Image 1 (cartoon, one colour):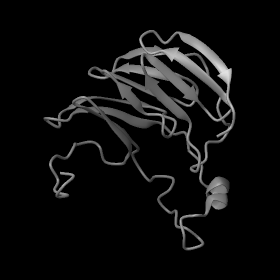
Image 2 (cartoon, one colour):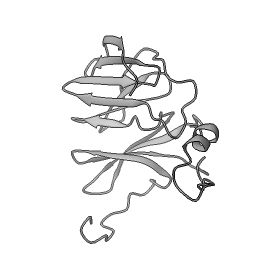
Image 3 (cartoon, one colour):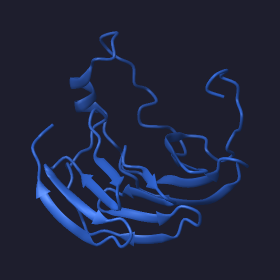
Length: 171
C-alpha cells in the first residue's frame, strides 16, 4: 500500500526484478536469476556521482531475463518467457507489451505472452552502460525507439510495420 507501506500482495516468481510496469490490471516484470551485474557496486567517492567510473566499468551484460506478466488483482502469473531485454525499454499500452531485445523491437500480447510482431534490426550503442538507457515509448498507436546511435525508428504498434526512421539530435 503506497500510503502505509504495508505489503498488499507478493508476486511469486518475481524475485530478481529489475524493471516493472503496470498496464490496466496487468503487471509486467523483467527479472534476472542469479547475481545481478551491479550487486557489488558501491560509489567509490562516497557519492552517487561516479558517472565516469560507471561508464567505464558497469555495462549491460546482455544475458536473457525472465519476462513475466501477472494479474494485479489475484497475483496469478499469466505467462513467463525468457528473452534479452535492453535496459529501460519495457513499456505497455492497451494490453500489449513492448521491449527492445538488443537488436529489434518486440511486441507481445499482454495476456498470453504470444509474440505479435518483431521489428527489423535497429542500431544501438555498441555498449549499453548503466548511466545510459535506450528509449522505447508507445503512444497513439506508434512505438518509438532510439538506441543511442542518434537515429529514431517508429513502428505501427498494431502491425510492427516501420513507419519512418530519422536522425535526431543528442539530448
